[in-house]
Image (cartoon, rainbow, N blue to C red; front, side, top):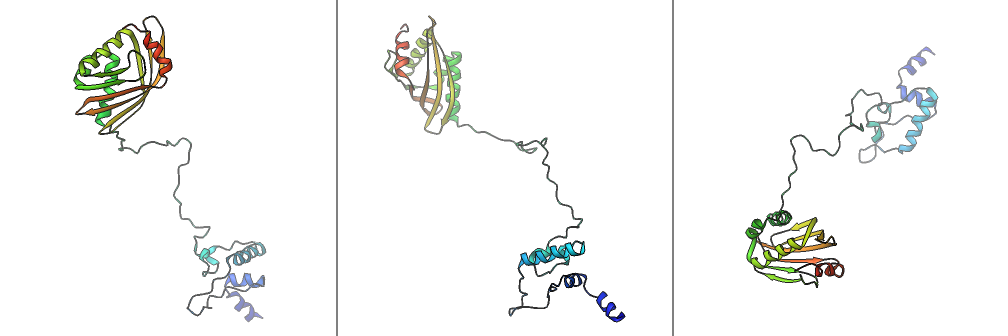
Length: 237
């Protein structure tokens, strides 16, 4: 009897626990014809291990399981290996660039010319306009009012701007501006107030041809000509 007890104490603890449960111990020696061990059903093996834990009150770690199972080669639960920490605090700054990284924005030169042109009109800078209009510029004014039509040549265009400035106080807002080597397109809204206090508002689109930093041809169109034309016709010449 003593010899039997000695031999049982030399057994692998996992095999002893599984024997008590009347479950076969993992066979590490059995191989298939190609030299690899047959893969047991993972779910069955998990159930065996759970039953062992419940019966013995001890936890069987992955290192004690059958090494033929892929999941038995994972890190034991009691490993002291440290996992990298992720800062999930709500106070951690988000959406910011790393130190030393800067965003750059490159605007097309033609877009810059048109944007500066709107600023020049706003402040009444006729010298800037004279410098950035081609001598043979053509400016198309849409609609059916007495102001509508085509103005050809720098002198005619500047004269039109002068009349407009005397008749109204006009504020133009740019919603978006797109441009390339051939065209610049401006989307925006405008409001013109006459000297007698009457006013009109409209959304507009303007298309520019720019060459060598100067406007060569421009088209301007309002969204609601039917409402804007009567206001423009009421302005003094």
